[in-house]
Image (cartoon, rainbow, N blue to C red; front, side):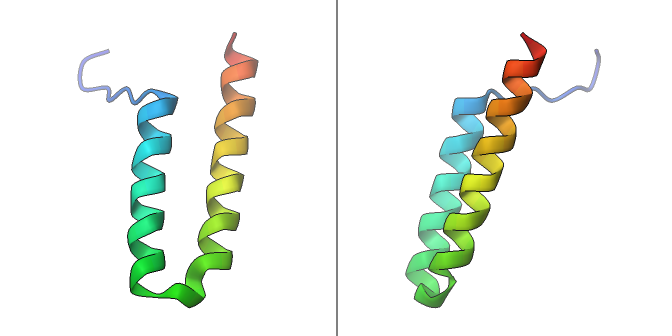
Amino acid sequence: MSGAIVIHGTVLASIIALIAGILILIRPRLLNYVVALYLIIIGVLGLLSAMIR
């Protein structure tokens, strides 16, 4: 697996939360979209991790 990038779910969730927080500070009207995208991404990651096990 040379050149493969592995990101653990907790690290990815932290990065997404950080980006979402910054976007909400910049554009508060984006809150609904940011929260929706965050929930979708976390849900997909949770399902994928459950399927891999």
